[in-house]
Image (cartoon, rainbow, N blue to C red; front, side, top):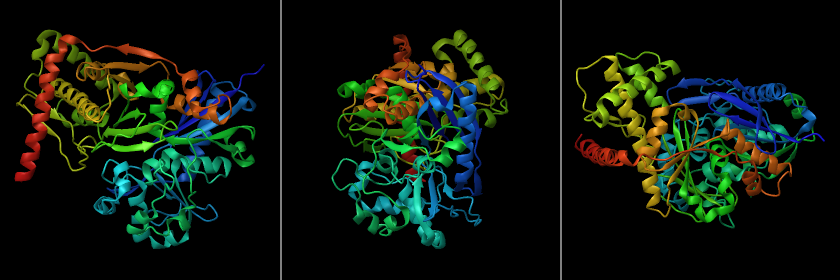
Length: 528
């Protein structure tokens, strides 16, 4: 008997990735295709949604080929994507969101900050919806972007008939369904999934979006993550290289898919799921904490109901630049250069040598605040700046290694700051599940354990985000009766690293200095 197969698609900022997986969670084939981005201004970034769809189709076809799979065996498909905003007319044709006026650029990228002023206006309303967005509206969310679009591109707004989060757009391209995932609506559209009347139209009217439903084709109710949105259309099946027997599940925002891939195994024990934190770490870092009840936490997005698992609350924090910050340190330092993987490995190896020689005195008086691109959590301050204390005239390679090490320490202490803030709100986090590019950096993986005092789990899955989306696809295809059961059945386990007890005093002192530097920065900012 042939085995049923699943296809998972993960669309990031620069590429679309596809994987073919078994119902047990094994990855059989994986492919990646680049996607284009248009920058007309420092705060503007746009995608071409048709380019994204083409990249998705190419990645799926290649993954199928690499897996040596029969397309007829694929019974489930799901999409995750960045929280980017796709604008179409009533007939589904693209509408420009770019100041260059080209219709192909119909998608405002998640990282686009053109709507800073609109985000501040939303925050100033003090509306109830802000209680479920960390108390502050971010320009990365969709409501400020929609406000900007209506004000600055009235022709596009007037013609708009369908507006999607990117993951929902991909589901629409695949099935023709206008359904929207609870993951996208709760996290980015101020949809309150835990109440009987989830859309707060009074808030939308207050910020000038009283006509949003006329232009966005939004449903009154969101679809639970993993809900069956129907089979592929004939056109979509042909483009993807699949068949119309394949069903599509309501997807997620990309980081949330990673959280599902590493935390889904605890779905059957929601009362203790709050001991576990997902850390999706690469260029930037997202931290995801799940709980059985809502836990509002200032400076942390959420609490979001049903954004990852139906019936479960999510708090989402993050660090705006982590891998990108280490790259910057290498480029910035006179002994650095291009931050290619070989350079990171060379620095890590030399740090190990220097630490073996100098022990805990290595870079003892060098301290860093890692907020070079603002502080997303737990301060929620996009204007925060980085700080380095303890510089000398040294400019050789070893001085780069010292600065790199202390920057890595600061990144780990930033995670500790977030999780300790969450723990004041009822969490009891003692385990970090780390996925993403940081798993390839031995210094960071050591520090995530030692600097936080937590057990660190590195998933065995080759790609935890694709695994999470395969869980969604399996649910939509009916291979499991619920998303909870799919998660528990498909989990791949992982390797644990326990913190070194002898390192605790050193990092406790570093953390005390970290907090004092935050206080001193606040004083200096007030003085200046």
